[in-house]
Length: 355
Image (cartoon, rainbow, N blue to C red; front, side, top):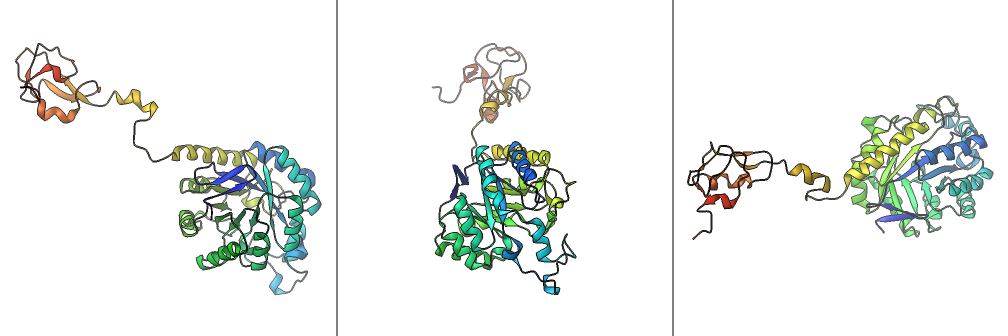
């Protein structure tokens, strides 16, 4: 398994720029023009990719309103699964057109399929990658179908324990998936910061030897930025034009200015991470001249003995290193020396190595 995946022209993994995905989800409220506007706004906000969801109510569930199909404990309480998905799915006929719009802007566009017919459809669209949603991590038939496409796969891990993640990863690999990334995800809408546990991100990377990232449903931008500091290579965040929308996902989606602020924060942290190095940086060189060094602090006559009164460790850094102070004390001046002179070996009689 490679330590990066390649989506279109982009390498995604450690050592490469963080790959930022704008999740459209249901925020188009089934208005094609709004879906197009979202893509353009996501591009202007710095997204590298737009992600869709490819399903219909019938490919996700069945039209039934008994207690098993009633939604409870979420933002969508009181609805049935079928009723929710009927109002939130992205019409399939839009998706090739949306992909072309995104590609023309220089962005990738791919999707989360929810059954094999969606994978067949997306293959005809020639999507560059597949996203596996958290709740589909247990659908091994779907995982195998996606793996057989040989396309890169990004899989969210919300609701899954380590054993379930391992089983899903093994299923994908055995079925032919060679490029896989895993996203830490808390499948609560919205998610609370204290439930995010983003220290899991580097553990996922170590456990499965894959690029890792974050699929985030918190209300702000702090968690994704912090995730990058922990090694996240991918950030996925829901994107909306305005939370005044009637979208079912509005409560955990970012507006364009917020998304751009997140992207800017990620790019700054990305630069700050740099590499492990201890040498003086170019911009530090001038300031380093203001480190301490040994200076003569009183006028001295030739032959006079140096003491703590006549030589001190002070700023700036043009004299001998302060570590030589003990050696200098009790030596004698080789010549007259004016106050404020940086000390050097030529000003000392009987310096180390003299014969």
